Image 1 (cartoon, protein in one colour):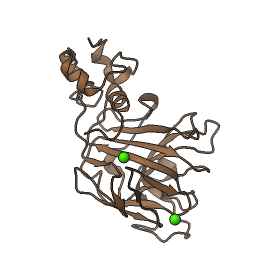
Image 2 (tube, helix red, strand yellow):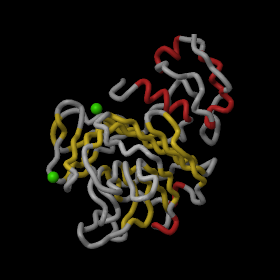
Image 3 (tube, protein in one colour):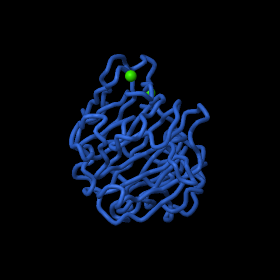
Image 4 (cartoon, protein in one colour):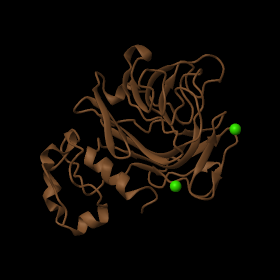
Length: 274
Ligand SMILES: [Ca+2]
Ligand SMILES: [Ca+2]
């Protein structure tokens, strides 16, 4: 029996008791009541059946190409790293990164970017995810002091008083940046799910860690304000930032603003599921 409480408020309440279930058990249970739930802008997202991602990267195989299992938007691994043959990709924190195709956010009102990673590195503002554009344009030369002009970012640590995992979004550089800062720095050697949700209808940015909401902030620009030309894992649009060191297990991009309970359900189900 699946306990479903107050699903009409699903998007605002991550304490909902969909708790430890996985999508398979929910589908066979009495979860039909969840149909009217929704945390996204249009209320079409239920909490017990996850939508299909638009892009999904499981980091399986070997070599230096990261395959998109759904959308055909394969990425190139640069800096000398390669897939480890065990379903992951480890970046060295020195110069490794993944360059995904431009335009992953094009035409979207909402997006959820969800990633499973193990951090193994230091520094402030390394980028687990950085989709955006730098002052140097597409594929800018490193070392020329480029800065981000628009971006959607997940970083495990910053330099603020609250200096842990953060989400950043901007359509106009640092000046127009919306930021959510939280405590955990992901330095425990464990695998973590981090998700950023840009809800264009509600005009909010939200950050989740291991299925739990860490914070939400209003956003004063549409997702189309972010020019996702340099869609990178491990590298920042800001030249001064360090590269991310750690292992990626999975990356998903949904064209919906997932409800909190849906993010939690994805965390409970785990990566590498069919
Ligand atoms: Ca390298
Ligand atoms: Ca994997």
